[in-house]
Length: 51
Image (tube, rainbow, N blue to C red; front, side, top):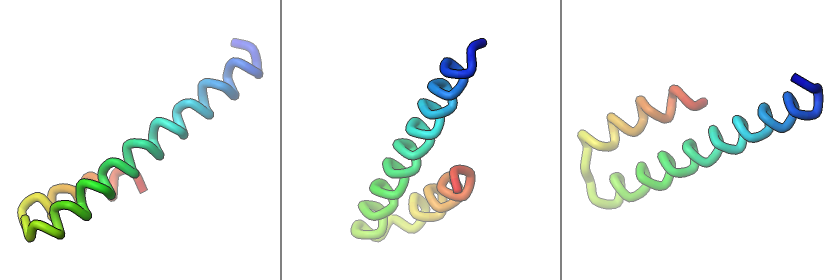
């Protein structure tokens, strides 16, 4: 695989990872606003996987 292609793939992976992390953070904010403790714990575990 060419170096440019490899860099593009790695950049796309990072963007994808950041998007997932932002989504989880948003869902966590909503869960906190609703007081859903079970969902808060679950999302905090998920977030640790992306940190």
